[in-house]
Image (tube, chains in turn green, cyan):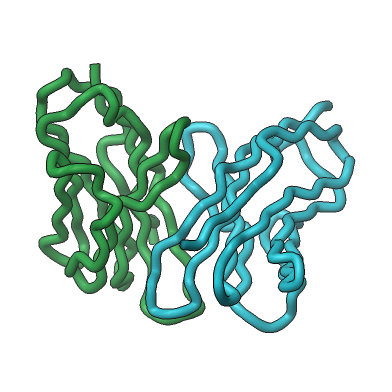
Length: 114
Length: 114
């Protein structure tokens, strides 16, 4: 398996623009997570899905952020409009159902908003 | 709310020396416990995990960790460090119930001297 695939790896955008980050989870995994990593706040969960349904979005910072999972093999995280403080590395992860399972992470998308 | 503390922000060891990275958690019940490693510009790779049973768990790359319930700790160890072990290490916890989200510590940066 190719693992969790994220695109793009790097994104530079201007403040006010819309940004869309993409994730393909490991085939067969039914949980998908979006995390954000910053120097100030470390790794924090933004949202996670189970069977394409959002379960917990309490970590989404504000209404400018939205996430969708239209099918089992694809998810997007959108920021509109983007702000410089959104600059971070965004990770997608997936896992199987079951108590004794772990999350597998993608390589991340480094977002810079200028 | 659960929390994870990694008290050492940065550790430097010489190649061949032993290593111990500390992790303490705060949670009402015994959570599931994980150690991840992140190399520069890369995603998070799982080193090892603890769900139940034997409190000494073995992981990849020669790492091990010991769960100590009385101390709420899950310290990572390696008897002999290699230069390629230089990276950032994250301890994470997950509730042992149905919730799936990981809570991460702030990370420990490991430098290995030749």
